[in-house]
Length: 476
Image (cartoon, rainbow, N blue to C red; front, side, top):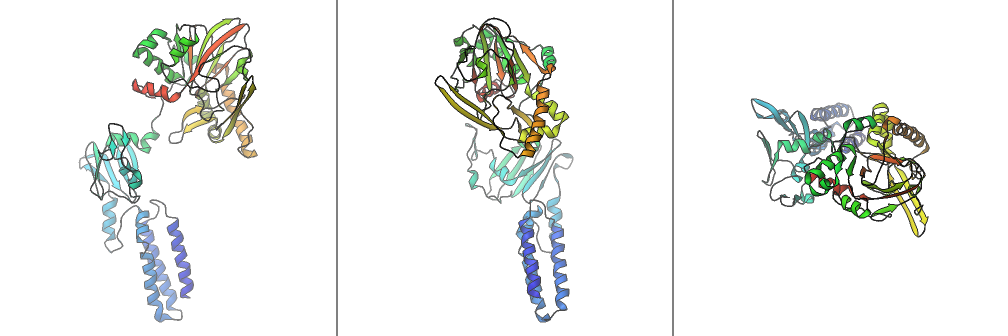
């Protein structure tokens, strides 16, 4: 009888321990569980054979529960003693601490595995290992190189601060080895998960044709762009906000276009070369090298990381047509999010293959890129990349059939938004006017044309453009 009851109690206790999550086990419930099970066993054993050994087994069972003390303390969120004074300890550690009796704009509370901090109307939670790992003291962080010196792997994963203190601007943590970590409260708000959820990485102005035209975004003169920080900053600000920007009075040559491009970033050499220069001679296995109309799309979806920026400069056109189509993909995606959020979510989760196969005049390429149509930052759901190209989308074989049909419906909703006439901005590229396009955001296309048309351009690395913008004081 005793053996059967113990075999029932032991595995149940172990299962409970295996399922413990952070701050999920209540101390009171655990203590009550121990007492009630022990009393129940005593009552049942008192009516069973072998009463003389009951006391011994009950004591052993009590010891079994007591041996889980460390695990329960960790899960309860507090260091609580199993001694009779546990009530006093519980009240002491669960109380909110304020930086001053008369000031309630900052308060903190210690838990078993994290610090809870309330400041600037934001409730934040910081893992203790995180707090030790991000220490900005001279021995842990090199302010000259802005790099971490601390070996993260050397931090005890069960570390807890020995003491905590907060003044009006700073959080102080003293660790078991005596090391002191200091954090500015504003820094913590900015760098906490809760703070990041409220921020955007890249401020943007989403637009349709009417919004963009009413904004009257100015072009930047080529000389001002190349020779002054003010001209460069104005250009980059327009580009970051709207995803497109123009430079006027550019000499209509490939060499001058290259100089222009290198002002903001490094040129990204691809299978198309460093600077591409093409006419409608079908010299490459791509529809762009024809006179046909091109529907809206983003480029290089078949790269694992699509090219960030595209530069277009029309050097000559002796004919008609050929206007360039521009559509803000983020504006269209926002409309989908507002009207059909479940379809927006699906477009962020279904991975698709895009493929480029070329066997033309010595050019042999087979590129494959994988990713969803819409790409978001998971902590704040901010859209940062749209991968939309119906020409280069490969066979859909990455999800089961029932998801495929839902994806087609979601894709149709997005396509409908992208094709609304009010979302289309048409511009005529002419010699001397260079266009920069954010290929992670803006879809481009063109109408069919006649006559002889020469275009040059290139792809730019996105990281280096953002680097230039940040050093000019722009949020990017």
